[in-house]
Image 1 (cartoon, rainbow, N blue to C red):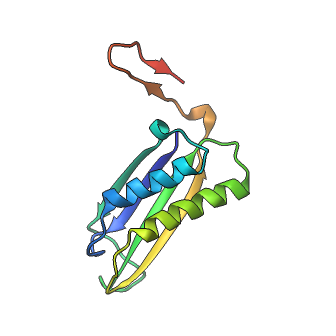
Image 2 (cartoon, rainbow, N blue to C red):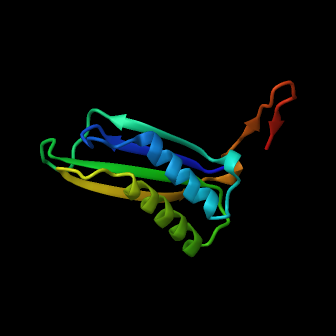
Length: 126
């Protein structure tokens, strides 16, 4: 399980969102807290955005890592730093001001439902 949602502005010339997701997924696997096949990540390019009241001369990449509860604050912070480092490593040299942010959010276990479908098998609920 975790879910990683990356929003980034379209003015980050040369930013490869797929490479950023791959790097973030590797960081999550390397943390030892998640199985590779459990990580679900996606990136959404933002055409319409604002950074303060400025014109388009600024940009950002913001990731939300959603995880099940049970990890202490230090572990959550370490996961956030690992994803942040992975994203920063994928940023090209930019000609604009850019902010990179990561937040770690705990899902509500009581309201989260997941099922897994394998070819030829009955879906498994968890």
